[in-house]
Amino acid sequence: MTISLAELYDIPANFINRLTELDDDDLEAEYQKEQIVEKAKNLAQRTKRSDYLAEDPAYNADLVHWCRQDFWNYDEASALSLAKNPEMLTFDRANGRRFDSALAKEFLERRETAFRAVSYGAIGRTSNPRNWLKWFDSKEFSVPDRLRELITKQGILSAHASQISPSTHSTKTEANANLGAQLEELTKKLAKVEKELDEAKRDVTGKARSSLLKIVLGLAIADLGYDPKAAKSPTAAEIAKLLGVWVSRLRLIRSESISQKLPTRCPTFAPKTSKPKYPVGNRFRFAPNRYRPEPQSNEIGLHHLN
Image (tube, rainbow, N blue to C red; front, side, top):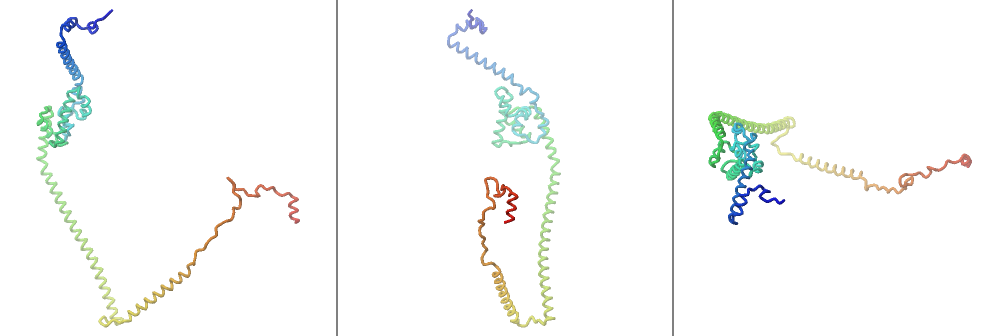
C-alpha cells in the first residue's frame, strides 16, 4: 500500500492542488512567505519561554535598600534601572540569554552604553544614584517610577543633612587646626629647650676645667713658689727627653728578651710507619695466637726444667 506525501504529513488536498497550479516564481514567493511566518512563530515562542528573567520574583530588586547606598557602579545602575537585583541580573547570566530574553538584551545594551560613558569620562565608574538618574534621563532610558521617587527622596534627605552638617564639620576642622598649631608650638619649644640644655652642658664642662686649672695654679704659686711670669726653665724639657730615651731602651730590651724565648724552628715529628699489631682481614681483626691450642702438662714441666 502506497501512502502519498499529503497523507503522510496530513496536508489538505486543496492545498496540494493549489500548489500544483502555481508556476515557479509564485511557488518561490509562497515558500519565502512561509519561512518568514515560521521564523516569527519560533521567535515568539522562544521569547515567551525565556521571560522568566523578567517574571521571576528572585530577580526583583529591593529598591529601598539600593537607594540608601552612597554610590552605584555601572553594572548595578544598569540592573537597577530595570528594577532588577544587581546580584542576580549579572553580565554572565544576561549574556547567556541575550537571544532568548528581551530583558537580558535591554540590560546588556544599557550596560554597554554606561561602560562607554565611564570610559569616556562622562560619568564616574562609581557615582551616586542621583547622577545615574540624570544620566539615564539624558540617554532617554526609561526608569521605574518607584526608583525615581526613592532617589529623589534620598536626594532631599541628603541635601537637608548637608545643610545641617557644615557647622559641625567646620567646628571640628577649626578644633583640629587649633590642636595642630598647639602641637607645632610645643614642638618648637621642646627643641629650643633641648638646644639650651646642650649648650649649658658644654658651658659647665668648660667652666669646671677653668676652675680646676685656677686651683692648681694657686696651689703651685702658694706652696711650690711657682712664678708664672718667670722664664721657663729648660730642666723640664731635659727631663722629658731623658725619659723618652729610657722608654726606648726598655722597649728594645723587652723585644730582645721575647725573641730569645721563641724557638728557632718548629719541631718536626717522624711519620708513623709501624705496622698494626694485628693483621686486618676483610671484616674482622684476628690475633695470631687467639686459636692456638693450650700446651700439655708435660710441656709445661719441661719448660720449667729448661
